[in-house]
Length: 156
Image 1 (tube, helix red, strand yellow):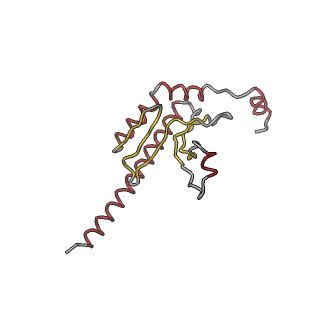
Image 2: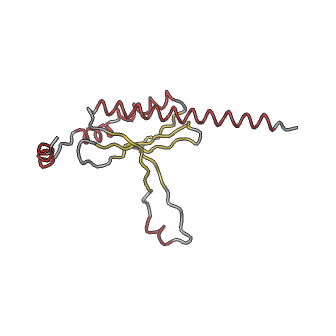
Image 3: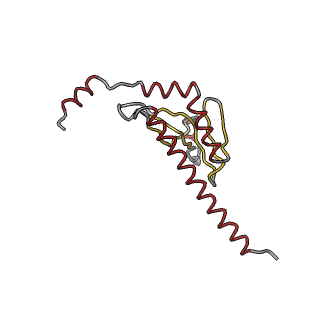
């Protein structure tokens, strides 16, 4: 006979484990964002943003019935000290139970099975020369002269 009570308890434990994994991933991402903000001397802010896949929009617009929009999440960076563009660094896809999660950038796709793998992958991401160029371009942005004058003229 099937033991439904044991199956129920197994499902409850799996749900708790998934919740722990998601919280752990959130903590790693927050630590990553904080470390990069510090390394960039406050000129880098990392966030996760959701985007619509833009391939063949004209075709999707004329199909019937309408197809749902395909979306993806990206790890992005901005320079919060100036008006800067939002720069996509990598695609991000968490697993339904937290792990494995996927990070893809410049032709690479990495699956992270645990906290240590995620930390290594994020370190590889920012060590990549293409990503380094993107981050350097943000950190190097300067305030425009008129913005500096306005900041100096503002009363305290």
